[in-house]
Image 1 (cartoon, one colour):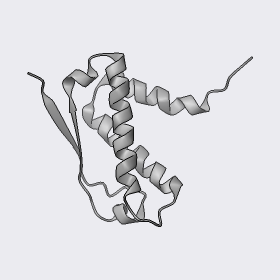
Image 2 (cartoon, helix red, strand yellow; image 1 turned 45 degrees about the vertical axis):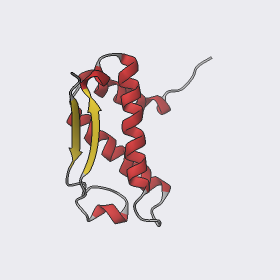
Image 3 (cartoon, one colour; image 1 turned 30 degrees about the vertical axis):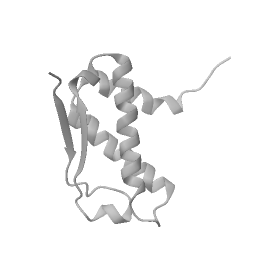
Length: 106
């Protein structure tokens, strides 16, 4: 039987969007242990974490800037990855975070 886990990023007071910054909001994220079993499944799980984080942060204040929403989503994503506490998922997230700063050479 598949075990489903729910992560809760509690006391989300560090959010960068004004509407969320003072609320101490609880955000839930459910996943199955099987989603950590292969690199492809971990990649899909990370995509889901990113989408959930961005969707949540985008529902805050209509006055929030895109930069604030991205900071909020990055913070929430980091909280979820820390709560999952899986080495390979953490490495994947770190490598994707560094990817935009790589330069191509010819």
